[in-house]
Image 1 (cartoon, rainbow, N blue to C red):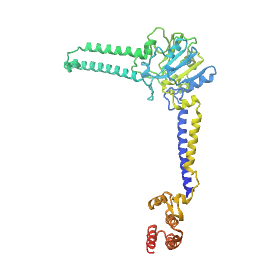
Image 2: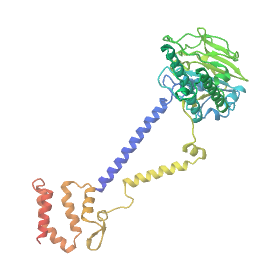
Image 3: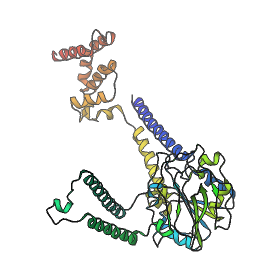
Image 4: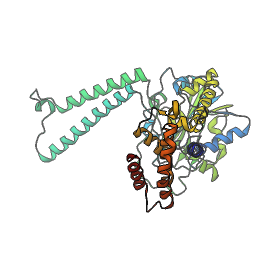
Length: 456
């Protein structure tokens, strides 16, 4: 029975091991396919990932390709021969993207690096939006409330004009001096302008203001099945852009407010790819990212345009922080940094010993020790009737053998002289139970034994 119990423990351990291994296998498959990453991440190998672009550059052999998982404001090792690719930045956050003076990316561009920023037009539901700092969230929320209050007041003025009735201002409702609507709007605009100045001082200027470009609002449109046709424009790079450009899937267009911009690609008369010099380096903006996706490359994208994006740089960095993949200082990073692999080995050894201890006892046992402490004359110490019965039940004794086990324990707990004579009296009852367990059950047998022993 002890062997059967140990086999059950070993089976349970093996089952848990198989479940853990299966779970890890599923996670590894998800990581390998890249399905857990947002769209246009270079880790994704599905149609809307950019892993094919990344791996194609790797196979060229003349370009050093890497992924960045460190916050862009902490990025190091950038030089004039580097191209930083931010592929698939969300449209909602494009105009809120900031470029502080201390930004290592902008400093690298000033010294000759190339920055490529493409937009995720959000043509599918799955979108990752970069997190904002608590301070920036407070300012953005404050600005949002100011704009909502202004919009609500203008809407109430329109209703007032149409109904021919006046709507009291907030100051009038509070019992104060009436304030003209125009004056209140001026105050709110001044407050919003002050808020913008504070954000610029602390977080840095907006990239749209720093580089001088805009994204006009998109009106009604009908997208062709294969996207809009594009035509080439001008470029300031040393390598000319290919005459064959990819089709355009994004409905958004770009507005070059600064004359330093050159329109590289048009859809109709509107710009979709623009380029400008910034210091010794260059900046490229595109209103779409589909042209860099795995699906686009599979259907025959224009490799000349993708190579032009890199600007002929020998080092190309795919930034993954805009997709939410940021390396943090966790325990595994510390273990790798300080080479504390012995910690992992110690944990594995401890787990192996714990599993072994749970499956097999370290000290060989016996039936007497399993029942309790054996005293003089064969008496079992430390066991009451209730605890002894519970111990027997916990040992999973089959019902057909339960009565015989009880008699064995009872006989061993008696003095040697009395046990033999009393055992002879109860054995016939036990034999009757064995021959007819249904007609003469355990309860009837037990009661017959008790009555017999009480009469002696």
